[in-house]
Image (cartoon, rainbow over all chains, first blue to last red; front, side):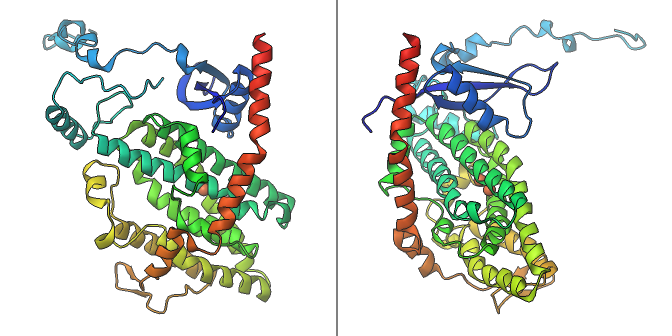
Length: 93
Length: 317
Ligand SMILES: [Fe+2]
Ligand SMILES: [Fe+2]
């Protein structure tokens, strides 16, 4: 197409105060300002958001799916409350 | 967020990876962009999501034709909002397709060069205002029928895009049905306009579900990989069962003499599959016009895309 492509941005929306920003999708834009305006037009046309973040996709560092079995290993059951047996008759624990 | 095209687990032989993949999909686990997937799955998803995106984009044209002539300011506002939604749907879907490793430019090229397909329905003309009603009611109605099961598709980014889209489609269908209701309850001329529009859109709407199950090429694999959940004929039947009572409410007649109720379902006649193939192959009433409109829009927007980049460059200093 003979032109430099607009870069990829990831979009995060806080749906209302008190909630965390959540990833909703991505879009292309020439710069941050345009990314923010496009994100508003594309992802918040029905009042879905009280705040928007746009992040250059290249700025995100992701874990490697090939490592996920060791990276997210779950072999320490004792970290979970369900590991412990609460004796019958004991309440409030 | 989506690092692309990395087949990370390449230390394992393909057969084993493929077995794991099949087991995962069978267990209703989602596939994400960086996961290993069979090349055929990637190809199938890329093609389907791209076709879907193209359909949303080309789908803006038939109704766009009436924005400047909507009968009231309220209708104009609604129609603008609806067409804007379809642009958004195209964008969600292009983004989902890009996570599979294809670029936006490649996707746009495929559409503009005529290489890619899009839904046959958008190659029919919008001749009267009632067509905006019939499209919302029938075309968006059929789209919802197709899209709701896609919210559970095995490919995560596609499924998530579909959730957003489905949330917006219901407005599209209702505003269309409202247009039809007003016309059907209006003057004899208005009712005749609604009926004439229904006569033209009914069969093309049924064709939106694709060829009959026996002839559908990708059905088996699509079902196994949990991309499709229902067959074309199953969805078509659901759509007819849902729509016939709505047509009765409007006091309009569906253009199918074979339509009858068997106590559970509405049986209906066979769509003209020769027409379907013709339209899909590029020989419908508006194929050339639609592609020309897309090409012009893309060419006319080139200076905007370039100027935005130059502006961004300048600001960076
Ligand atoms: Fe749509
Ligand atoms: Fe729609």
